[in-house]
Amino acid sequence: MRGMNHRRAPLVAASLILAGLPACSGCLQDTLGSDGRDAGAGNASSWSSSSSTSGGSGGASSLGSGGASSTGTGSSAEVDAGFTPPDAGIGTCRSGCGSWVFTTPLPATRNRHTATLLDTGKVLVAGGDNGMEPEKTCLLYNPSDEIWTATGSLNDARYGHTATRLADGRVVVMGGWGKLSGTLAALPTVEVYSPTAGTWTRVDSMPDGRAGHTATLGTDGRVYVAGGISDTQYVAAVESFNPATSTFAAAGNLAEPRYVHAAAALPGDKVMLIAGRHISDTLASVEVIDRVMVTPGVALPLGAWGVAATELDDTRALVTGGYRAGASGDAWAWHPTNATWGGPYAMVTPRWGHEAVKLTDGTVILVGGTRGGTDPSTLSACERYHPADNTFTDSAWMNVPRLSHTATRLADGRVLVVGGTYEFDLLVSAELFTPAP
Image (cartoon, rainbow, N blue to C red; front, side, top):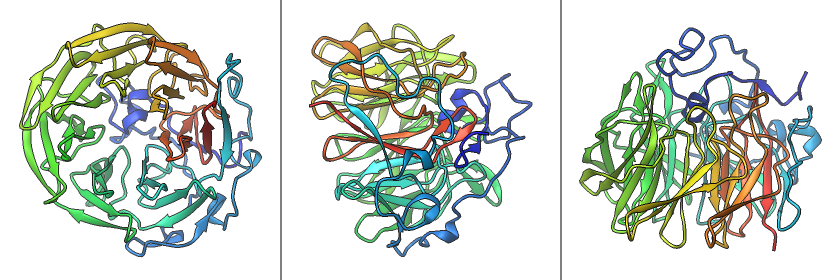
């Protein structure tokens, strides 16, 4: 038996794990529910919303493992170390690796949540999947003392949603999978979090429910929402959210509706949508949102889904990994000045469903994800991309392999990784990465 803090998680196609979406056409349909979960997955107890501060109060209780009061860093032996992952903490890095350490675990398992750095330096973890139902509880992580604190709960429990920090410091959460009239469905609802009040406020809903979409803050301060799926339909409509009025406006339509894609903000108030999946098709196409219209972009040389996109300091957009008949070890860099893709650049480890975080020195660390097609496929391996020469080097590895986790750069330059899944198990642990000096 694996560690007591694990819960059986669905063994599903990774495209579903990434976004909490229904199964692809002809893919595991007989074993999955409409939310992409294994219909036979067992349930276990979790930290319920009644254990947290109710939505609207802001909360003040400090939480460690299981919701008990916490005084600081959690022990790895009490978190996800009831088993020894085959590849955990090994790696081939020998210099400039940085280091990973466990920090205080979550009160309960959580994956497909969001984690957003606030202006206060704290990290807001919102929603997610606890293995039994969508989650509405939210937590704040304080890097200075490594303590989790309950904050106001979402009005609508959800997972597979997006969370975007606005220019004024608030956070807007959109869509995801949740309950509508007691039935699991893609949500159209939108909520805005006030760090000052510690509460969520409903604002105008999106015209379409959607999950597995992207919501990208443009240089004009608006949030551009694109792609995703609404129950069984792929959403073509693109919407822009105006934080000043909390309203949506039409911003064009996608020529190729998609999910499990990536997005990056470009100079000139543009947002680039990259690759992804449509039904069983792997997309190489790129589309560009230009305020109120969508235009074709220059396609990736090779299609993929489950890629990660990172905006570099030199205005390029880095696209890493993805899946196409197996995990991809290719990376590409978009040059907006001459409208071309550079690459492919060879990654250390092929992966998809990973997190990519730009560090303070401009390098990018790739965290976790999955190889797919091998056992075990979930990765603890991490690697660094160096923009100066477009090379990848091995980095220190996490203590626990993860998929459906979050990775957030903190104000002090460290990276916080929270929750996720390892093969059959949901995780409660969290880790901190400190880059090498």
